[in-house]
Image (cartoon, rainbow, N blue to C red; front, side, top):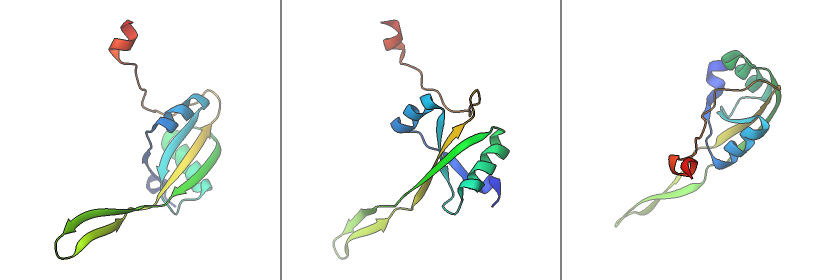
Length: 108
């Protein structure tokens, strides 16, 4: 699989920021990508060495989107998402967003 199609983006959540302390990065990847594809894509795109790759698939939930008087509620299924948890070699890191403390908290 082509490496530019494998990585869809990064996942920014409270859990992913907690994992950054352990040098574990969370990426959104293609559903058909294997662990070897993900490892090769990260090496090609970012130029870092990957030690470990763990993946999980989040199943899309069913959401009630709209209601009308005649047809009632319309249910839509959200798409499935595949997440990859990537551990890098010591001393290497990805360009990840850094959350700075608010100015009010730093002043106190």
